Every structure is written in C-alpha cells, then in structure tokens.
Amino acid sequence: MIRILFFLAVVFGLGLGFAWLADRPGEMLVTFNGYQYQVSLMVAAVAVVAVVAAVMIFWWLIKSLWNSPYTISRYFRVRRRDRGYQALSTGMIAAGAGDGALARKKTKEAAKLIRSDQEPLIHLLEAQASLLEGDHEGAREKFESMLDDPEMRLLGLRGLYLEAERLGDRNAARHYAGRAAVMAPQLAWAAESTLEELTGRGDWDGALKLVEAQKSTRQIERDAANRRRAVLLTAKAQALIDSDPNAARTAALEANKLAPDFAPAAVAAASLLFKQNDVRKGSKILETAWRAEPHPEIAGIYTHARPGDAVLDRLSRAKKLQEMKKNHAESSLTVARAALDAQDFATARREAEAAIRMDRREGAYLLLADIEEAETGDQGKVRQLLSKAVRAPRDPAWVADGVISERWAPVSPVSGKLDAFEWRAPMERLGQLIDSHEDLPETAVPAITAPVVSVKEKPADVIDHPAVSAGKTTAAAGAVAEIGEDQVTPVTAAAFAAVPSDSEAVEPAEELARLPDDPGVDPDEEAEKAPRRFRLF
Image (cartoon, rainbow, N blue to C red; front, side):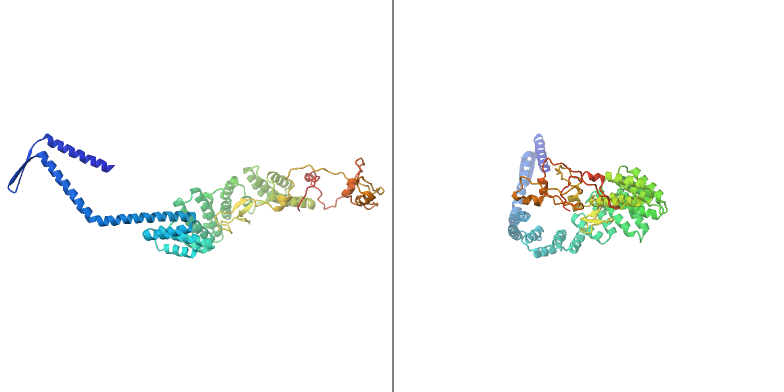
C-alpha cells in the first residue's frame, strides 16, 4: 500500500512539473562540436526524462543477464525445497496417523530434497518413524543425537524421557526431566517429574524454588501455586520440628498463611506455637481451621493445648469448639471424648448418640462402647455396640492411591505425587455391602404359622393328608415324631403340609431365661428380625 502511494505521489509530482513548464514557455540552446541545437524547454525536459528511463532499462537488462544463472538455480532450489517440505508435511501427518511405512518413505524423500541441518524436523520425523516401526533403539540414538543441537535439545530430552518412562526407568526419566527443567522451567512434563524427584528425596527448598519458577512463568495458577507451597512448607516444618524449631515455626506459619483451611499446616503451626508457650496465637490458628472444616487432629491438639489443664478445662475447650461448628458430627464426638475423660457419662452418651444420628460411622459406635463399658460395664451392650461398629461405615482417614495412612504425608507412597492425600472415608467393607440389612427396604415375607406342641401333652397322632401317597410312608416320614415330656422333635416341611387348615393353634411354651452376659435383642432391630432374609455370612 505504501509503495502504491509513493508511485502515485511521483506521478503526481511529474505531472505538476510538466504543467509548470508548459505555463512558462522558453527555449534551450545547446552548442556541441561546433553545432548549435535550439529546442523548446518542454522538449528538452521530455528528452532528459527519456534518456534517464532508457539508461535505467538498459541497466536492468544488463543486471538481469548477469544474474540469470543465479536466478535460474534459485528457482530450481526453491522448487526442490517446496517439494521437500511437502514430503515432510505428509510424513508428519502419516506419523501422527500411525502409518509407519508412509512416514519412513516420506522421511527418505524429505532427506533427499532438504538437508537435515537446514530443517531439524527431519530428525523428529525419522525418530517417529523408528518408533512406529518398533525400532526403539534407533529412536533413542536419534534423540541422543539431538542433544548436540541447541535448537533440538529439548526435543531430544523429551524423547529420551518418554522412552525411559516406557521402560520403567524412573531415575533416568527424572534425570532427563531435570535437565529440561533447568533449561525451560515452563515445560509442564519436566517440572512435574522434577518436582516428584525433589519431594521424593526430601529437598523441600529445591521444590519450593521450582514451584516459584512455575508461578513466575504462569505455568500454574496462583491458587494452585499457593496450595503447593503450603504443602511443601508444611512438609519442611515437619522435617525440621526436632532439629530447627525456629525454622520449622517460620515454615509452618507461612504455610498456614497461604492455606488457612489446610488442617496439617494449622496443626503443625499450632504445635510449634504451643511448645513456645504461645497458646493464644496457636488457638486462633486452630479455631480458624476448625471453622473451615472440623478435623479430629485439630480438636485433639486444641483441647490439650495446655498440658496442665484439668479434664473439666479440656471439656470446656471442646464445648467451645462445638459452639464454633454446631450440628456437626466431629464437634459432638470431640465433646463426647472430653466428657468421657471427665467422667461425665451423661454428656458423653448424649453427644455420641447425636454424632451417630448426624453421621453413622465406626468411630462413633466405638466411642459409645467405651462409654458403656466405663459407666455400666455391661459386656452384652458393649458387644452389641461393637457389632454395630463393624457394620457401620468407616471413619474418614488420609487416603492416597488406595493407601490409608494414620498421619498426613506430603507425597503419595505409591505414585510420588505431591499433595495426593485426601481426608475422606475409605472404601466400604465387603461385609457392609452384603450384610447391611438396616438400610434395605422392608419386603413383606409370608409367615407360616407352625403348630406348637406342649411338652406336657401326649404324643400327637400321625395325620394322613390326601396328597400323601398310599401306605402313609411319606406322611409318616414328614410327621411329628413321638414327643416325651423332656424331648421335642423339630417339625419338618412335610408336617406343615399335613396340618389341616382348620387345626387349632396351641400357645407356645414359656421363653427360657437369658444368661447374665447375653446381650439379647436390640429393641431397634427386633422388628427387623421377624422377616428373616438370606445372608451371605
């Protein structure tokens, strides 16, 4: 566009110049070799312009003829390069589609048309073709040759990393990822693998630097970076809690500042503050984390903040936590545990039962069993509560990759992933899924009224039924046997069929007395036991 405007401006300037000369007539006299030439000013101007144009055209022709060999060779070179790039593009598409034969064919064609030092993608296409053909050794050699070229070094490291991952050599994979992370920390695959390596060997400072580099390059969001920093700082505080308490406190407080609702960071910071007699600040940190999400570790360290406190003081602190988070099962369990320690069994039982109503789980039944044993010592009720605990859902725990841990850990012991542990309920037991009849809908099961014979009556006669075969052989096998005063024979199904429809029922015998340690039948389950179901165990 600028060139067009410039051309128009030149033409417009020439037009103005000729118009100006036309308005001012004059003559030009030229003496050359004894001759005088007299022409008008307009003709002289046109002649000068024509001579200049002729010289320019003549110079262009001479230059074109002089450069014609180079121009011709460049034309064929460009044409050859275009064919090579077309072959390279087709080969890359074939490699992406998984066509190894076509990828290899186009690799050879592109290598003939384009020099590999001019186009590095030929090396990548050759390596991809080797991988498609199953020649992993040749692909690794090609990736290793890329390490000598600064432009291809990251590509070679990526290929060697993937090959090491395929072979299961985690050390080699992390080595290549570490080299790539030093050169380009914005690479996600290199940064993540290097982070796993640093956290695996406990280099928390190195991991923090890497996370900061990821944040500066905007590879991860700000919230995700703060979460990772909080996890790493908490792990650092736990590692330094014995060797360097001051550094551990600084790391724990920074982690709590980054993630106030992160329970492990709050517990670590509060523990270090309590050891330094800063109960007020540590309690505030725990209260903030408790309001976000109640956690048993927070409750335990909060109620035992002062080692010299009496059991009633710990109960008061537990009730304070309950006021901060009402109608929560963890709050009720915290008060129930403190009340049990204070021998306040009424409060402990009330809060434990409230926790069961809000969240029926194993720990609540076990706590209720402890309360029952401490208050009454009734072993029957204790066993009954323990059986409910076995069938109840499990308590929340730290779970990562199928591993259940009693304490939080910064990385998964299986995959090495950072911040893999979650506070949640583990998978249900198999028995709970099969044997839990409390949550199933009640189904009507027809009951069969069995005749009950008193032990003081005389032996019953054998009853013949029309459906029984001749000779009374089958009826005698299914009928009730002779009953003595101290012996009762079980009634079989055939005997039920032999009972007439108009027979009169007999009152059952008196129930035997329970043993002292027999827990009996739970009143809540008595109605459910009438229609018996099939049970696997």
